[in-house]
Amino acid sequence: MKRYLLDTHILLWIFLNPDKISPAIKKIINDDENYLSYSTASLEEISIKCSLGKLDLIGNKPEDIRLYAIKSDFDELVLSGDLVTSLYQLPTKANHRDPFDRLLIWQAIKQNLILISADEKFEQYEADGLRLVQNE
Image (cartoon, rainbow, N blue to C red; front, side, top):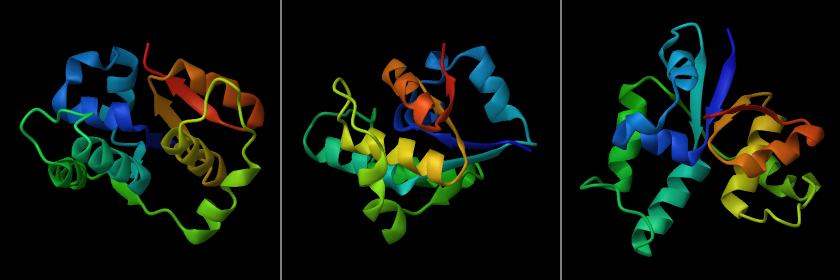
């Protein structure tokens, strides 16, 4: 069994725009042998961006995304105080400062999860211990 963490884009695309997900990622998602999880950091990001008008959930509310994930048997990973307070240890990259992305990357590293992402900037963290599968 492999353990995966879905980044926010992938989590949203699974439920709102599955055509954006590559066949390779769909295979991972549909394999019952894989452990799939999402972070409460993604839920926070979704909720904040919705409240600011920066994210359209196509008639859904942020809490709907969480319910879809629960119904899909994805595991919800809560950010612990230990994880959040140790985030400073993740090296800062000049071209990537998004705090939600950094939390997901750090959570994947610290909890030994493979991060599924569509963000090419995540590749630069592989040297820091990130295991990554890109949506290509």
